[in-house]
Image (cartoon, rainbow, N blue to C red; front, side):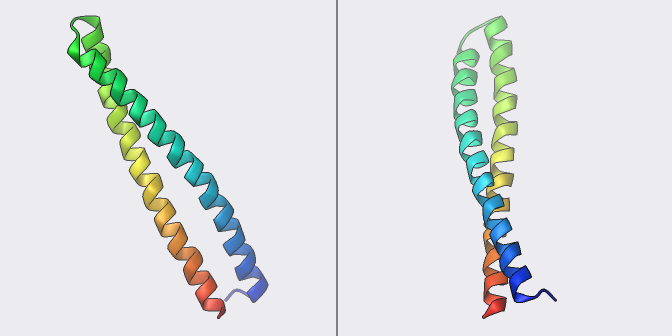
Amino acid sequence: MLTKEQALDEAQKQKKALALMGRWRNWLFILTTCLMVVAAFGLRKGGLMFILGVTFAALTILSFILLLLVNLSIRNGRRNVERILDSLQ
């Protein structure tokens, strides 16, 4: 079992990690949006642009999956911090 000071220290470290992950989520959202725009543009054209559009569509899907995973991690991390702080009361 953690002491009160250790639990508070752990909660503080997790809050800092959650803030960093929040910035990652914002950048992944921007990246996903930009990739989607480029993919839509490429898929409307023919030839090499179509191939690039398909590539960017695949990258968009990958970026979106990463965005969902980071968002899930943030949600679970917040619950964990709440549990730590609730255990102190």
